[in-house]
Image (cartoon, rainbow over all chains, first blue to last red; front, side):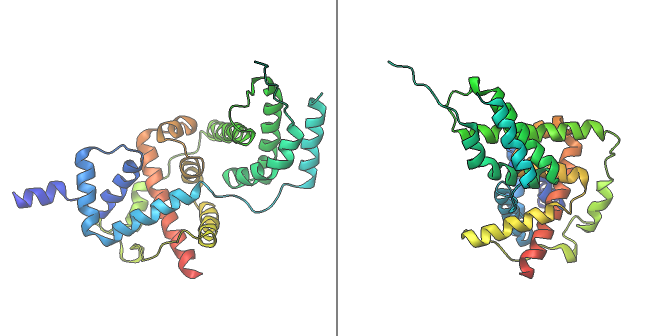
Length: 86
Length: 190
């Protein structure tokens, strides 16, 4: 029984990291969630992977450029706005 | 009750949000001219839709919603133009990351780090994410950008890029592995 559990319920790291992406979108079954939390509770690498990936996901939304638009484009858009405003 | 008249001032909007819109667009399309065009198109759509603007959402949110649609359209167009773009063989590539048993390969094991919540560290990690994203290969980069920078759901991304769900999960998994590895590399270097 124990061997059966190990074989069918235990995930390897590759499977665990795949399930994390699905979990993020709420696309994980109850069994999947159980398997994943069992794996991450024992595997410090996958635990780190999950935390770091979450942070990347959170900060990605705020990624922005530092530089401004070229003066040419800037003037072009102002001109366009003038032409359309009355 | 007197009907409130909303005075729209697109020129002022441009002065206030033009740069922000551009700075948002650029890392998402990776091309200065395209980013400028998308900002211009955003204002053109806004001018045309002024009558429909009820002042419910803030002008800023309204403009950003228009821009988001333009960015998604850009990827949709790109996907039709590049329909020849074949799926890379990702299954083989995953052997770089995991051993035969599916455990982390020795040189790929996640190290111990995290960015704190202070503004300097957040800004730093955002910069690193931005440059790491540029190292992703075409389709992986599109999937990553739409999912994490533009916050789209997987179903919508599949439609926009015209890829199957199973290809999507392979691509996003690979992109997440690569991004985390790259961010770690630059984060620990600093």
